[in-house]
Image (cartoon, rainbow, N blue to C red):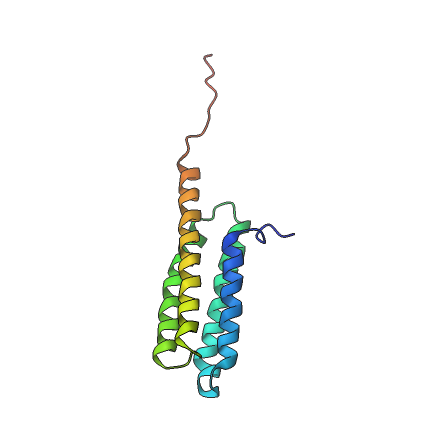
Length: 128
């Protein structure tokens, strides 16, 4: 089992990708191949951020990138809703709730990384 598969953020990000795939498949052709394809790629990139961060010793820069990507993703989903490209308002809510959950978990992960980096290193005093 890969290092990232047990992470709650990975599970929610995977659910987000699956919901997005379902929504893109339901879009009309005029939205599916433009906006829909962008949404699909962006959802996959979000999942990639999570996977890459799980393998990095220094996660902060990737997690900050994920934070920005989440905010961008929210705007693209809002545009899809405003254009009537999503199947329903419920689908919009479901996608936004998953993004909020990912954002909260990302912030927690960032906070834990900051705590790790601010811990003082143990040094052995040579005079003892």
